[in-house]
Image (cartoon, rainbow, N blue to C red; front, side, top):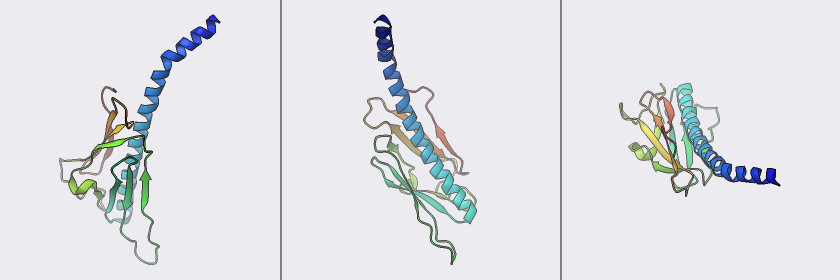
Length: 156
């Protein structure tokens, strides 16, 4: 009975910690999904030497991002726009890139075409949705096309 009581006390102490780690991982996973979508759009732009844009389809949870690219030359079939849909409770926007309504466009050289240096395009997200102290993260794209996830120095 004593051993079971000790195990129960340890489980009660550890449960909030495990929940916090799970929530942080949800937010980090969503940020890395957005980063992967932006990097894939950049690679498509370089591969085809044409501009490719990432557009925010939905700003309310669930967040949606759509990759738009120009039609390839005939007879290649028109590509279906890729869509990233994040889980509804994972994250919400705090701020989107200020230029062109949140659209990020990569040119054929892999650089941003609709932002000028030194101003980067920044998606600021926080999550999980509805948490009292949500975890903030930023996905930054600089003018050269580098995409990075910026985590806070101290996690809430």
